Image (cartoon, rainbow, N blue to C red):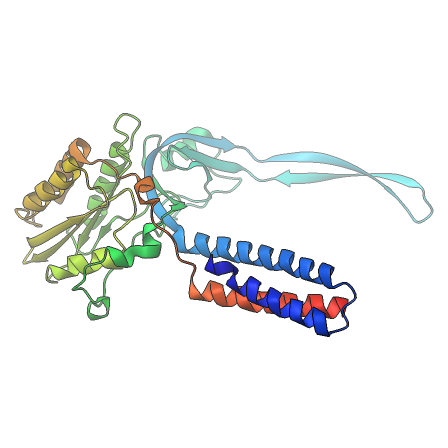
Amino acid sequence: MKIFIPMIILNIIISIICCFEDIKNPMKTIGMFLLASFLITIIVTGVDFSIQTSDEEVWSGRIVSVNHEEEWDEVVTETYKDDDGKEHIETHIEHHNAKNSIRTSDKGNITVNKSLDEKTRFDDSYPNTTQELEKFYPIGMPTSSVHTYENKVQASYSIYKHKDINLKEYKDLPKYPTEMKNDIQIDRFIGNIKNKDKIIKSLNEVNSDLNSKENNKQVNLIFINLGNKPQDYGFALQDYWEGGNKNDFVICFGSKNNKVIWCYPFSWADSQKSERLKINVRNYMKKVNLNDDFNKNIEDIGAMVKKDFERKEFADFNYIDIEISKVAIIFIILLNIIAGYIILKEYN
């Protein structure tokens, strides 16, 4: 493997140096360098692989329980010795603040310190019961969270990108939505829409329903209104997001005078049913008027996704070989040189 080439070359150089310089223990010197070089190569390669393949995806769920623990004071007794060796007992009060937490089906336990709108801060004085906390975080409320996973595709997306799309020519493409709005919510409608807060709430509800134990679609439904941009912006967005994540079903569309003029759904899901879903969603969206109730459109598309979406297993991409980056190779060379210098200096 080419990642070991720096180790081999430097080992040859060190071996030559050992032959002509006064080295205390040449075999030990060479052995120490081989060990250090091997560890450097493996560690840097592992870190580089992790950086190239680490990605984030969004999960959806619901609040399943809430919990409030009242503040309390603890009497703490400590024993210590003075300068003369005499023991003394000291007692003091240690205060423990109230604790408020929720449990969600997608992330687990989450500590909460304020309401979702940030208008109410939680402290020892309020809330005082689990029931009061539940007013701010009702059981069943839709939730979302970000999780990391291994994505080999993003390290070699160039083989999938649109050949006639140059991203430098497409300005103002929106970033992928992973930023948490608060402790439990991510906005997954991007762009302008009437009654956007209600639309986002409806989309969160649909996502949580699709990912319930009963449906288990493992999907992240995203809408993007690109306004009056032409359709090739949809292809550019797909490349900018590198195809999206493994559980995404992305619906980007263009609009003019509040009417959808084009729609381009994309997803890694490529089964026959999933491809049919993309066609059906595209045809449906082309008939949508944004002045109408878009909540119904989200519900309709949610039902279509529930019926036909089949998430692609990213294990199908295990055949992809990840090439070590040029930066990692430079690090390996530099660290090998430093290790060789230190070892030679130690045994010279």
